[in-house]
Amino acid sequence: MAKQRVLSGIQPTGDLHLGNYLGAIRNWVEIQENYDSFLFMADLHAITVPHDPAQLANNTYKVAATYLASGISLDYATIFVQSHISAHSELAWLFNCITPLNWLERMIQFKEKAIKQGEDVSVGLLDYPVLQAADILLYEPDLVPVGEDQKQHLELTRDIAQRFNHKFSSEENPVLKVPTPLIRKEGARVMSLTDGTKKMSKSDPSELSRINLLDSPETITQKIKKCKTDPTRGLEFDNPDRPECNNLLTLYMLLSGQSKEAVAQECADMGWGQFKPLLTETTIAALTPIQEKYHAIMDDKGYLESVLKQGKEKAAEVANATLLKAKQALGYSIPL
Ligand code: AQP
Image (cartoon, rainbow, N blue to C red):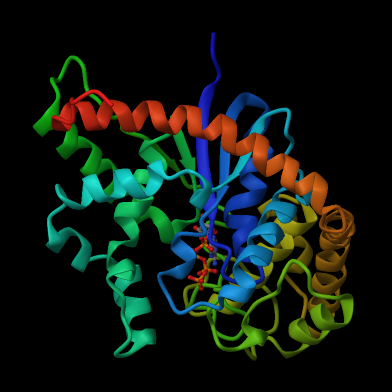
């Protein structure tokens, strides 16, 4: 029996951080053996906010190298660049014409990012979830593993698929496969180090708010030393009045691979002065092997390019077949 399919991606918009790793990449690695994974670099999404053309290609290589360095194996995964497959843009246009504008206007991420852009909000930023629906539906995945912040976008993807199927195909023979989001409980929302109520994000202007996967041991030490805590002694999970405490304990739990119960017990009587060095050491130990592999892969561009070329060929075959079905359902039937 064919394996079920998984699809996910990350925008090459800057340095990846612990949120991207714990909320997304680590989960892809954990389940990869049981699935046929399609993982991409969302470089069309990367230009929905102002970007530097001189950085785009290198950022895209960096994300691909991070996938591989984090343990994604080509035995199970196809890694490709979104812009290499023109079906993404084409299907997004078709979906634009069936998606009500007010579905997009209520997207939380649009509202948050639009505030940051001020006057300079692009149509692309509003349209981002429609392109994301195309990214996903082209590959007919069974599961889409993402962080909690993407939940609303995945619901929209499901709505677009269902609307398309309802309007342009029969119930017995739907054109688009409706996917299921996979959002793990732990690590689904890694919070900022400077504000435990805000998610850790690449676009936060404060470098101190996040730990990047490529941060040096010195930088990690500094960031954890300066991170926000509270005056209470004794550390605990799930106290809504102590969001930073919950976040830092969760990071420790995930990076050390221990259970929640073990961490709760170990840290119950600790003060921050004792906990911070422990978290620092654990973070450095978890990231060092990834960093070593990352640098080796980045030094071999020929290898990376061959991975992406192979990925393009496999992804294009799947994507073009779905695009053709969608176009035919819409009435594009004149032979080439
Ligand atoms: N803080 C987070 N906690 C858990 N998961 C997270 N993800 C991002 N931040 C966290 C997950 O990472 C994947 C890819 O994200 P992305 O880079 O494509 O876009 P994003 O969600 O917009 O990430 P950022 O860091 O917030 O980037 P900017 O600041 O550029 O928008 C997704 O699976 C996401 O859930």
